Length: 83
Image (cartoon, rainbow, N blue to C red; front, top):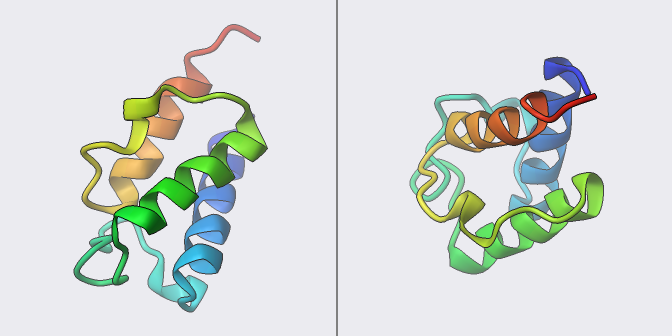
């Protein structure tokens, strides 16, 4: 899994779940304030990421504020895994 793959998946899932233009899903976009995400949207995002990458710890998205935070969590989990 490359960093580019992670970015693509996160952007696509965020855009689809939040029903926003993918161009708005930038690393500095605030999930709640800029993209109008609520707690149910974040839960749905968690499930969508699990559907793609397999089980993720429940707390993975607990403290994310931006799309960049989601990417950082995904990178930590996926790029640190042994090949």
